[in-house]
Image (cartoon, rainbow, N blue to C red; front, side):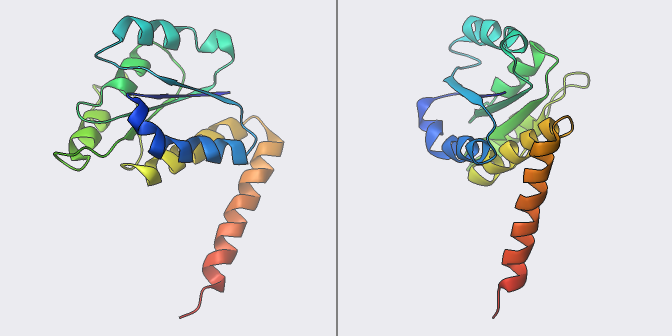
Length: 156
C-alpha cells in the first residue's frame, strides 16, 4: 500500500494524477491532507502509524516551504517520495529546493514539480513495490513497452 499526503486540498488537482496512476497499476493507496506546519502532531502520528497499516511507500506533496516530505521522512524508515507543488510566487522552485535539500541521513526522493512529478512519484512507488511483486513488475514492464511503442509510432 502507498500513502499519498498533500499539504492542502488545492494540491488534489495535481495529485489525482498520482492516485490515478496507482489505481491503473492496481496499487492500493490512501490519501490525506496534512501539513508540516499547521498539523505537525497529526502528521507525525499519521506517518508513525503508516508501517502498521501496511504502507510500503509514502508520497508527500507540498508547495512553498514544502517541508511535508521531510517531516514524513523524519518519522518513518519507509521510503518517502517528495512532489514539489507549483507556487504562485516562484513557480515551484521554492518547493523544489525545500524538498530536495534534505540533511544527510534523512533521505527524500524528490521528483519533478507538479503533474510530471505526481505521475512519476506513483511510477517510482510502483517500481519500489515491484521489487517484491512479480505481477506488478510485469505490469510495469508492459507499461514501459507501451510507452516505447507510442513514441516509435509517432511520425512527423
